[in-house]
Image (cartoon, rainbow, N blue to C red):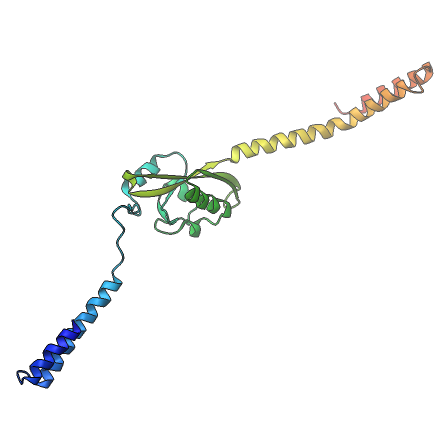
Length: 226
């Protein structure tokens, strides 16, 4: 286009139809218009192919309504790992989570982030456990599940959290009880085992030693706390 404009203005100037200054001004205007059109074309974002669905919008009303109705803390992520929506229970667990931001900015748990990446790559649910110290000590299980469908206009990863704190505390109580019971029973059982070995050994045929061992056993048994 610029070559054609230069030839046209040059021919008009040579024929005397137009002066040199207007010819140069006209050519400069055409060149500037062509340059602006080229810059706008390069700056325009590339559109998605027709067969590739667009990602769900941030804070999609339908997705937000579904997450709000769930009893567990749930976060919806797009294919880039950005937060599409989350319910109030998830915000209570990780207050730094924000819609439109990457989940890695608000959830600094390597095990959970690895589960999200593996779920996107494999297309299957991934599980991870983590321990939270602040504001209270709690254990959580995170399930990253990829979902897709035409109604979603793209693919999502649902990140659900389950509170494992009650189960972990019951397990700790069981371990403590077994440890304390075994410690309290070890001393009297050791004494009984010693008496049995004595009666089976040298005191087996000696009534005096047997009576002395029985008396000693009664004295030690009376000394044990009730």
